[in-house]
Image (tube, rainbow, N blue to C red; front, top):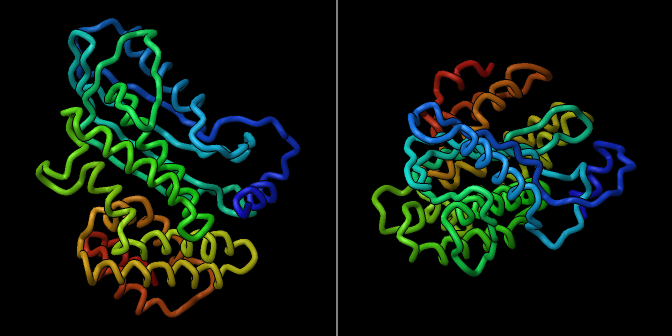
Length: 296
């Protein structure tokens, strides 16, 4: 309800036509592939776009202005006999209240994207059954996007969709495709990501996403200082995770998308004491220390 009211105020739209939840732009790069008809990759791009934008991911009635802007970049590295090896970058953003700005909420680079694609074959989504790795990966990130976006409007508001994403992981684990199992080396695949998102340990991250956007970014138009204080408060929440799980995937992902925005927020406008903020940022994200030094 809060999200619907918010977006109506932002856009002042009279459009009442209902549509699906995502406004996805899909780009398929196949420069590394020497074989294969270029039209095949264009059809892949077209069918993935239609799948993302035409699938109804929630039970909500969504107006066009409420769609979530997101990007799916598929970089194909190998192709043969309808089998593709690729990487997938997924980005999403949400609007900032009473402004023309948008704020990034997700930027994931998935290096384990292997799938089979046959032109014009129906892509069928069933959250409780594994139909193809292409469909499961796209469905996972679609629900993740919706969950994270809802978290940014309502505290822990995206739980239902994060749980759907977790169920997709559970169903896909037996498929044999990479990216679904915690038994894989490293801790940065889909399984680890969604497990962290739903764990009590990382609840401060989800709360921080809400505080950052609703008490921070969305307050900027009426009171910049209050908005900056809200963003600073959210970063203090993130420091709780650092104490328990330093250099976690979720924390790294957050600063991948937010570091430049944070520097911009605290480098202009009404002055506030930023010494504690900079100290906190250097503890949580030391890899961005050069950026934090720009905050005055």
